[in-house]
Length: 261
Image (cartoon, rainbow, N blue to C red; front, side, top):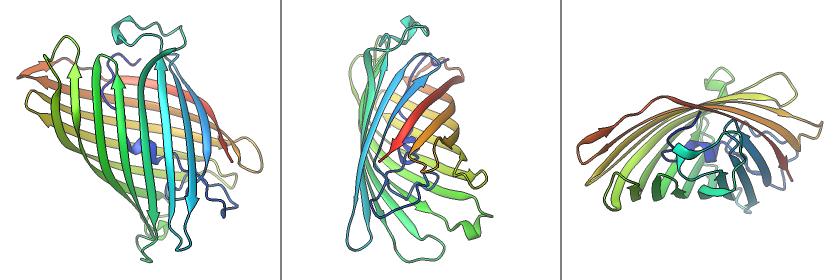
């Protein structure tokens, strides 16, 4: 169960592709293919997440997408949450702009650049900006696996209720690796996404590790409807004014339905 939420993993947003109008085959396993889509996800703690995304393309082959997502819980105080009640209180949200370039390189045929704004209003309150990049590795060099290294720089403010006396300005970085493998010819795939985040300020220092495993299966022959399942493992360490806050490994399961337009 999720007991103490930190910040949203940045690689997660990139693992939700958007649809370009010129594409006929929908392949969400490739994060540098862009699709317009919407999704509704439910967690094992009865949290609800809404996702929506629009995309477009340019004459030079570049593609872009704008993602918006918001998560709702039954109580913003994580210590008071009831896993049997569906969420109605706002917890966190993200806005992301994602732009894909094709540099014409054999080893790295596509490069993506993202700009994220993350807002969290739980025991931890933060407003963060991140600029990141993701590189698509040619599957010919990775034994057929889809591999996308990602890195980003982060800045913003954070406040921890009952612990920090005021907001602290933070800077840091994130490192992630998005991997995927198709299962047969149906389009179904599994994905494994480890990510490390490190943020530090005058009073608050935070390190967060997450590992997200997902199985995604098309529900129709056109691959417009998908069943999404995901299992998250996270651990965060926070130090406030030299005092370490206790932390445990947290797990959460998600299931939902996604539609590609």
